[in-house]
Length: 156
Length: 330
Ligand SMILES: Cc1cc2nc3c(=O)[nH]c(=O)nc-3n(C[C@H](O)[C@H](O)[C@H](O)COP(=O)(O)OP(=O)(O)OC[C@H]3O[C@@H](n4cnc5c(N)ncnc54)[C@H](O)[C@@H]3O)c2cc1C
Ligand code: SF4
Ligand code: FES
Ligand code: FES
Figure 1 (tube, chains in turn yellow, orange):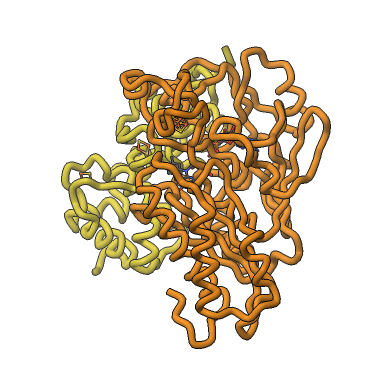
Figure 2: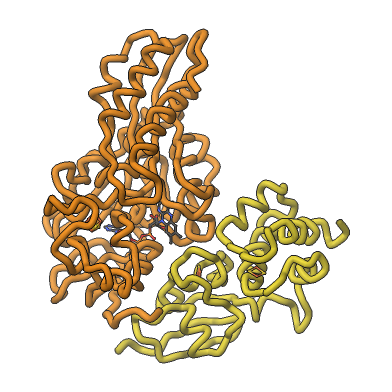
């Protein structure tokens, strides 16, 4: 058995016993009780499990926890400043971009990374960026509008 | 879904990696981005007791000119605008792989060696158990072509055809040292969906080398899939070449998503070199490629439809490389 896994999660150093075959999503949800990250398909086909590793959006269901060793993992629990919501989250609420809500953490992680790298994306760029996240409720229109709204500072 | 227990090894140099691979009882798999291997492991498809992760081997990462390390991520290549401008067809193929989220982890080396696919194979353990296993995992027959003892699982990588038309080579490292081979020589055309490459035991892909002639070469990639994201290619057609004033200076076509290996059609494009293109010639070429390919019914779309789309894609590909005087090759 390998040494305990050392990783930073949402800014906190974590040490966890971690078998080599542990999947990052399982470490987060089952070992650390960070259940904001959702398990949809568990096979890379829905985007619900999106987290950031060193700032890059990553599907945690297709990542070994050991691959995050020594790196910074950010989950939906760690994405907002203090206790409030970030711009994307606020826009999702204001635009009604969430229905059952199961896909929302994944969309927020993807969209927040997009706006960090490209603060003023075109609608086409937004659609492309979220094309790895599935939503079975909204029909996407409200989600795209929410990301557009967040990009324009919540005024549109 | 939890994975079966395995031991993970994390070497840091190519030499250490090759050495490690020699002494692992029970077999191992290389782990690159894991976006193909881990879903297969979750479905308990051909799992091994050891995994050798290549992510810590510096030499395998990044691009320098026409040399692309096997562990370079597709997402990074997509953001590399100089790369995209130099190799437009390759950039199109990379942008069509899976989804943006998958491409953040997926590597180019993993894409070239992506496991062949079949709808009787890419299924959960209970699904496969209830029907009866097949040759490719745990069984002794093929559900697609039951009269043969051969696997027809489809090569479903998008990037290989786009590299093949640019005459890319790959560098392989293994117990006998390093060798460089043309990309398509990696694949076993005489094998099947199981014995699909010429990689020896303990050999890994180090890098892809694009020749100088590939830089700036007009090229394109078209993909047939049901949804514009997520889906593997039901057909991927890459083209590269120079067609100047309707005359063919060079032309290469390659396809994936149809058979157990990606292939080029030099015997069909060769006779056109130096010739003036006409709409008739393009249609004849498209028809000859359609007749040359042999998809079977183990993916989502019917083989006959995929073959007909081969002809459509060939016509569009050639039209995009250089407009045909008076033609509407759509
Ligand atoms: C939802 C979803 C959709 C997908 N859609 C597509 C698609 O449209 N088109 C497509 O092409 N792929 C698709 N894929 C498959 C996969 O994401 C890509 O092919 C990816 O590029 C594989 O790279 P990887 O680094 O993740 O490979 P891994 O999963 O790590 O490895 C794949 C295979 O290659 C071997 N390997 C990896 N690197 C090396 C090396 N350097 N030397 C020797 N062997 C090596 C591994 O042992 C393994 O057998 C999809 C995957 C998912 C989950
Ligand atoms: S082609 Fe036949 S042997 Fe190969 S994976 Fe499909 S069912 Fe199995
Ligand atoms: S749970 Fe990871 S992509 Fe669906
Ligand atoms: S809100 Fe229900 S899946 Fe998106």
